[in-house]
Amino acid sequence: MTLELWLSFIAASLLIVASPGPAVALLVTTGVTQGRRAALSLLPGYLLGDLAAMTLSFAGVGALLMASAELFGVLKWLGAAYLVYLGIRMWREAGQLGGWRIPHQ
Image (tube, rainbow, N blue to C red; front, side, top):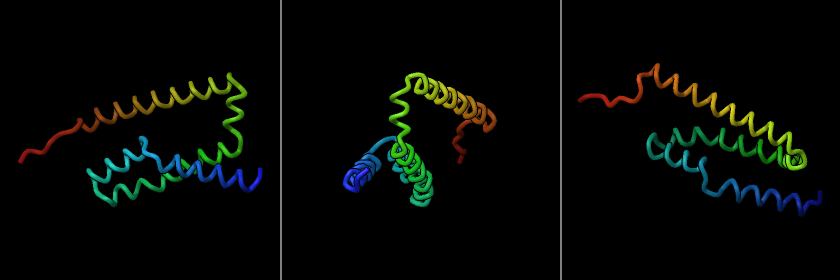
């Protein structure tokens, strides 16, 4: 890969990271509701996730998934199963905590 192509990829990745999306909405919401310190504590995970996605893309995993429909299907089902697992776990934890309650004054 030439240096120009690599720099173009990095620039495009940074633009995508900087564009508003669910992660930016989470950062803004956390900042408004819980303060700047809480929002800043989310940044390392956000940036690490983007770095991992960029690294995997740069390594060619995206091209591999495009070439193999079966592998892409397996990855989609694994992702869906993980989301169901997270939903069930959150649902159970909400029951243990008694849900959201507003304290009486």
